[in-house]
Image 1 (cartoon, rainbow, N blue to C red):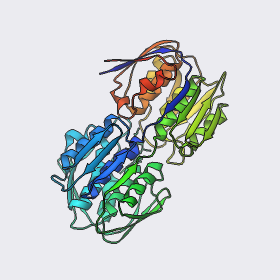
Image 2 (image 1 turned 90 degrees about the vertical axis):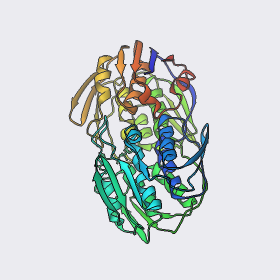
Image 3 (image 1 turned 180 degrees about the horizontal axis):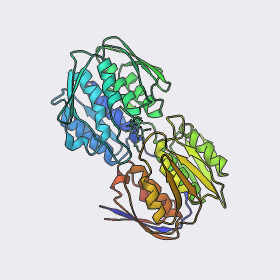
Length: 415
Ligand code: EPZ
């Protein structure tokens, strides 16, 4: 039950290095189940969710040699093709073992993830895709049970763009008999990164990063070495924090081209944004005008940066409207920001934010990105802010307080 204690306001200045992407590391770890040979993953973020996925893999029978940002995973044999409730309840993304286990072992039993703070988040599109690939799928006692002697290639049309749904179908289709086409596929950079790993393991995949992905199934896959793509959401979080604190921060070891939806808006509010190679520099000063954002699947404005933008909008001049189109319940940070003096009106999927000076307060984190928003608010607020339950933050941000303090902030972790 760690807390963060933040003394504000702060002006962030300096350089910060971005870690590997959590949302690429998780499907890449799940992909190791597709081969009996070792897969070495580097640039893994040192966050709780990666450790949870390693636990799930260990439960299935993987041997994992992990050190700092590197892990070599070998699954010579699937000892138990299941992901128990105890593990899945701590991390929904555990459902990413469904596709690879079914493809490799021919049967799988995975706990249904259940809802989470930001929405109901069903996995019906995942299951529909596996059924299309020829699997028998049933729900028993809170578990998904699926089996197929060998999956068969098929055309799959996703009703709604789904990131992990696209990943599960792509993972399963790599060992299917025949060709699979995924239509209305998600285009996130994490999907392109997963496809890059799978192709390096011998898979035949085309179109990753577009809305039509073609997977030609193969008999087997082999081992490989793969460097996980940088975390665009972590990079975006620091970029927004730089603007919110009217600072000057160079975010390094990132892929600025993955953040165009954000950098265009930072430029629109008058921040000086410079992109060069693997670095993104954000400088801001004085009064900045309000700016509306609406979340959308990639390459639109990421829902995983919505809360952080809402925190920034509390310090912009005028009224910003923040529209959340992906998840039905992703405004938990609003009530906590209001505790800090923010003027925000919630109307269904809209948060109407009127710029106003924040003051420090005791607030509670409810989910990963809401926690990051409260940290940004604490950095801009007058006085001391205490954020409880930062375990949410540790799920997806590596050593945040150290990185912020190196930029001139005053953040203490109280254990
Ligand atoms: C991924 O979640 C990310 N998680 C999320 O990041 C991210 O917010 C989300 O994509 C959207 O970008 C990982 O990659 C591990 P979706 P995912 O399936 O795949 C509905 C973070 O903060 N839907 O793209 O679970 C769903 O309810 C996390 O790092 C169905 O109805 O999201 C949502 O409204 C939070 N049925 C929409 O589609 C399904 O079978 C998009 O969800 C699947 C999804």
